[in-house]
Image 1 (cartoon, rainbow, N blue to C red):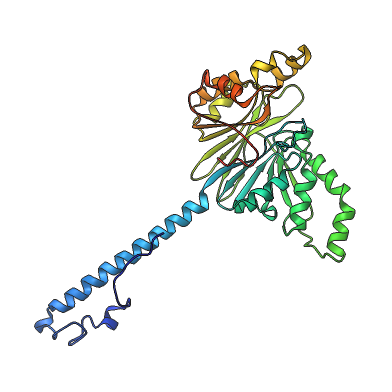
Image 2 (cartoon, rainbow, N blue to C red; image 1 turned 180 degrees about the horizontal axis):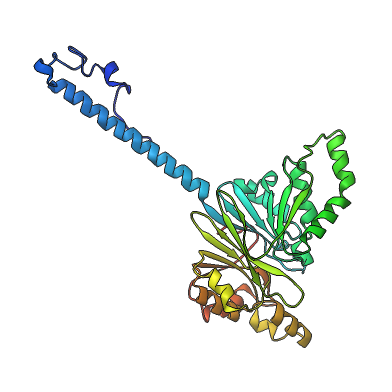
Amino acid sequence: MEDEDFGDGDFRDEEDSGAGQVGGPGMEGGAEGGEESVGEAAVKEAMTDRRAKVEEVFRRVKTEFEEEEYVTKVVLLGTGTPVPDPRRMGPCTAVTVGRKSYIVDVGPGCVRRAEEAYYMGCQALDAKRLDRLFITHLHSDHTTGLPDIIFTPWVVGRRTKLEVYGPKGTSHLVNKIVEAYQFDIDHRTCGLEQLHPGGGGAVPHEIETGTIYEDEHVKVDAIPVNHGDGWETFSYKFTSPTRTVVVSGDTGVNAPEVYEQWKGCDVLVHEVYCDTMFKRRPPHWQTYHKNMHTSGRELGKIAKEIQCKTLVLTHLLFFGGTPEQIVAEIREEFDGEVICGKDLGVY
């Protein structure tokens, strides 16, 4: 914000400036019969003008503060799959609103990626700020980072337990991890480290369809999606004062009512596989991926239907193909913005 020029002199009350006083500064004398002199009128006009400028500055500062507080971004912390690609960490997407972070899924390596994003200037992803996690489903590649996000932020300063939202089975998974690390918790709190006892653990919340979380920055809705038989899986819709973000989770093609709830979002973060190379896969893998995931051509139709402003691709199953191939498949149906996601991409 540029400095404002308010002219010379101090801000004073009318009494201090001499306004309304006979013989005050800038006046030749008081007016007879209670009438305001030319000097008094000039001082009052100047004071009114200055006050208006001050009020405008305060309004502008307040607006800038509010805009910064609610700026909503998507940061990809992991765009990979179960395949251990060193360029792509396990599935993990951060939605940040101001300095608040909301993490979706926690594949391997994601806490380190979050700290890397913090070093790049994303204050919300300072490791000790990681205190809310939303799990789409319980596949291992989406959850093997759980011990890391439960305990590492605590070791570096988080003073509250991690809040974990997810499908049925989340409580069992989280509680067993915390139980397995109880020896570590006890010694870090009662030993020489003296870590804050409130931060070493997690609080699980098993969710159902609908609004599952809300604070002053964001509302989070859980929307069930299709990820094959036996897997309860949710997509998440984050609604802030400035933006709506949908994170699909792992999913095949869904019923129309799912896309109705995604419709018009600012950003859709969606998994995808390369349709062209998929056709070269062995038959049993074709059956698996067709039921569990979404092809580039299918995703193009989905993005067109829901009219998202930006489509960000993650959980990228290339099968030997290229990002350009996947984007081309999507563009057969969708002419909006398409971004093939990379770890630490900010959108």
